[in-house]
Length: 200
Image 1 (cartoon, rainbow, N blue to C red):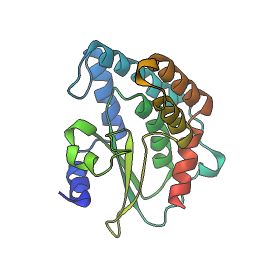
Image 2 (cartoon, helix red, strand yellow):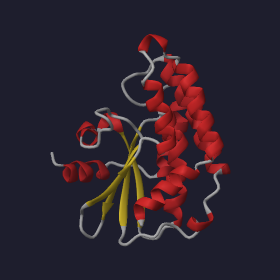
Image 3 (cartoon, rainbow, N blue to C red):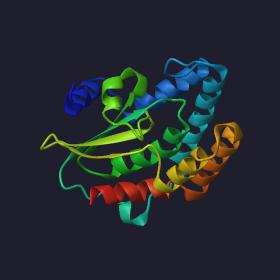
């Protein structure tokens, strides 16, 4: 399946943000999560991520230069590969939602990574199925314009630095705490700036 065919197939069953969040709330109430791994740890991450997503939807400040939306040359479809347990998605997707709401001609939808392996495998990061992964399609030409993800460049640097540490010396929880502290201090600004740069 070509990247475009995989995109179109996934788009047909995609979710808008409201439907995505309704499912998020339901699955947390059921003490479950998305994807095949439904361990206690993944369920706990999912509950925490719902809180993160809710917080950003209430507190996120859109950059002044983006108050009227992104400068699109042509209408676009944005499809985001994600999962409820993904902490980076909880920190980044609300910014995408706010920008889409302000941008005429921009359609934003969400799909679950593990339900769309063909699409995911066309958009790997350093060989891995890292999410969230935003795929932007030009509606007029049908061509892919850009991809973004799984996290802002500065956050990716934190992760890359962590991965240089020998496996036996890695402190996963400390890394997660540092990463999410960075997200809190950044206030979703980096996501907005990077998406603006991609749309220019």
